[in-house]
Structures are given as structure tokens and as C-alpha cells.
Length: 401
Ligand code: NIG
Ligand code: FE
Image (tube, rainbow, N blue to C red; front, side):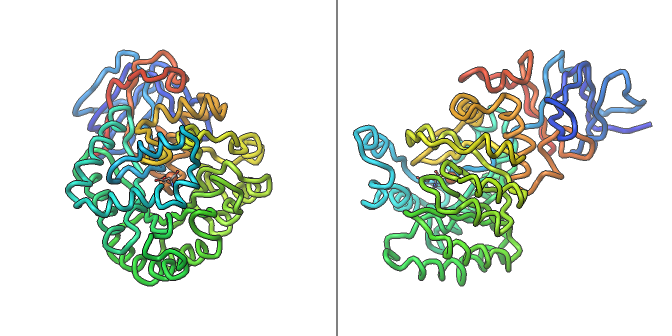
């Protein structure tokens, strides 16, 4: 007879397991949890005999894997509402960046804040995501752009994970833009990342992955390649902000380095989509940035689908291009702007988001052995999670620890 910590009964379950069709629906289901892992899942009538320390009836509610926001920049100082206004008056994101605004404006604000101040500013963003069913959040650095401030950001991100119920995965994004003090000396700044910052971050275990921004206003492919080679030497997986504003061969570059994910992809070519498919990387779609920048060129969704590329969806929560601290809104936008189906949207914030973080074996679906991070919803069908706009339907978020 089995011993369980918690038995959930009278539930409807969308397992989101890859091998099952659709949402992997199980009507009148039960799910047993032991040691923070799923110990049994299936139809209630098949439930084996067992003793549960606690039993919870879900009263017919739907259970899905807890949501995963696999691309955020939610630790930052200040806001960029002034630039938002400027863009609506006609300025472009690139023009503002070239004039010293954009990412650099947030770098100045972030450098000017203590770790405690940054933590206090970021905590409500983490709480807002958790309140809508998010249990895992990736947080990037990239607004420090020197050794001390990048480390400060990563430490704040780690602390957010340690002090909240949410699990935080950190990503070093020192190659976000060339800081003012290195203007015209991007290669020297790349040296600083490779020789000083990366080794220290790796030695202190502060980052789970390394990201870069490959773009005309940021880093060239050879500079990104240097950062990625160093990350590889240090045993850190990579991901890339690729082809967001122009086709800079970012998708191919990400594929070449076996990146976990290639993110944005608005300007990715057919050959770029093929390269991602062959490498097995996840395409992370960020409709909040697409919306905010008023982009018209969409990621090549049909080609990515044809090539069988896994599609993830994330908030990209940041003060410049995606001031959206809501993964449900990102799902809503992915369906309206990119025409992802509700099933693709839900897979994109569960199974495929886990894969984009290198956590596919650990979470993102409701299967035996997976982490028991589970969202319970007051809905009649899981497609509603993309359908409703601004409607909170989370009944409960059950977390493994
Ligand atoms: O994902 N593209 C670069 N990075 C962010 C924007 C950051 C910013 O503008 O502050 C993005 O869109
Ligand atoms: Fe981003």
C-alpha cells in the first residue's frame, strides 16, 4: 500500500504531457504527491490503495502544471514611461538607445539602487506572477553591466527565489548592451565579461545560464560567440536574444552553440528556423515586446511549426520593451498577435518553458516523478487560460516546497 503526503481527488487534469494528444485531459482524476513529487496520476477509479496524510477534494476544478515564465528581466531600477511616451510621439527604440536612453537608462537607475532597494522593487513583480499561477521564474541580469552591479542583480534574483515560494532560475545577461564607459570599445567590454565576470559568477554559482543580445545596437555575432565559448568552458548553458529588430543570424548562432532557447525571433529567416529545429532549441516568443514596440514583423510561426520547433511563451517583463508583469497576458497576446492556439499557449508556459530552462525532466507537465508544482483553476476548460483577458481564475497554487 502506498503512502502519500497529499492526495488530490475530484479534479479534472490537463497533464500537458508530450506523448498525449491535446491537453492530456483526465476527467474525474486523482493525483498523489510524495516528497514534493508526483507519485501517482490517473482516473480516480484506477487509484491504487494508499494512505494519504492529507486528502483535498478539488470539487471538479481543473489542474494544470504550475506556469513557468522562462524569460524575464524583472529586477531593475526606475521605469521607462518617458520613453514609452517618446515612442508614441514618433521616436524609435533604436534612436532612443543610440541617444543614451533605452537599456542604458535602466542601467543608470539600477546601478544607483542598493540590493535591498532592488529586492523591494522586484518582489511585487514576483508576487504578481505567483498570484496568477507561476511557480518558476527566470530572471536575467543585464542592467548592471559591470562586475559588481551584475553580481548585485544576480544576488537579488537568488534572494527573490529564497524568500518567496517561487523557484527562481538566474541568467547572466552581461552582454545586453555596451555600457557608456566602454562606448566604441565593445571588444574590451566582451573581454571583461569573459575574463572577469563569467569566471566569478560561475565560481559563486550565481547563474544557471548565460544570455546575450545579438543585435546592431548590442553585440555582434563574433562577440556573442566569445561569450558563449567561455560559458561553455565553465559548464553554463546559453540562450540568446536573437533577431528581435533585424536578421542578424541570431537563430543560426544560437543553434551553433546548442542554446537552450532562441528568444524573440521576429526577423528570423527560414534557414534560421531550420537551424533551431536541427539543434533542438526552444523558440521563446515574447509578444509583450512585439506589442510594446509596435512591431509589424512577426516571428515565422508557421515555419517554426513546420520544422517542429517547440514554442514557449514568456512575459519578457522589463521596463523598456515589455512592461507586462503577467504571464496570462503574454498567453493572451500570443494567441491574438501570433495566432498561437490556446493549446500552444498553455504548452508554451508549461512544458516548453521548462525545456527552455533545461528543466524538461523536472517540471512543466503533470507526470509521475515530476515536481509537484500544480495550479488549480476555476475554469470549465483549459483553453480559457488564453481566452479571458485580465480575469483571475487561479483557485490555488500547490508547490512542491
Ligand atoms: O528582451 N532586447 C533586449 N532586451 C530586452 C529589452 C530590455 C530593455 O529595453 O530594457 C527585451 O526586449
Ligand atoms: Fe528580453
